[in-house]
Length: 81
Image: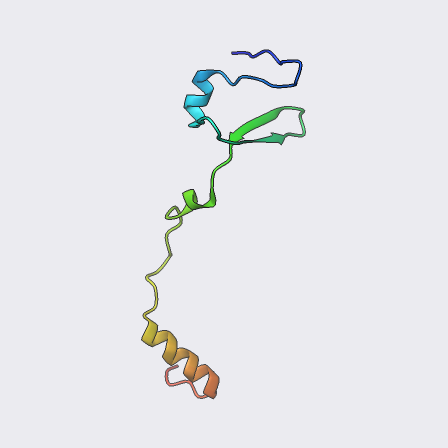
């Protein structure tokens, strides 16, 4: 696939590529330059799309246990060892 560059430096991204990247009108793209001279175009996504992709290695600690641990640490006398 290829596109022409207008006199204003604008390029139309072919529909197949827009569909593949999930680009919609008003969307934004980022460009990355590689040492070999190639350029990669990727869709700019909001940080919210990352929500849920990393899962904790262990279950969360209950609030009462955190409070107890903080109190023990602050007093200098741990209840458990």
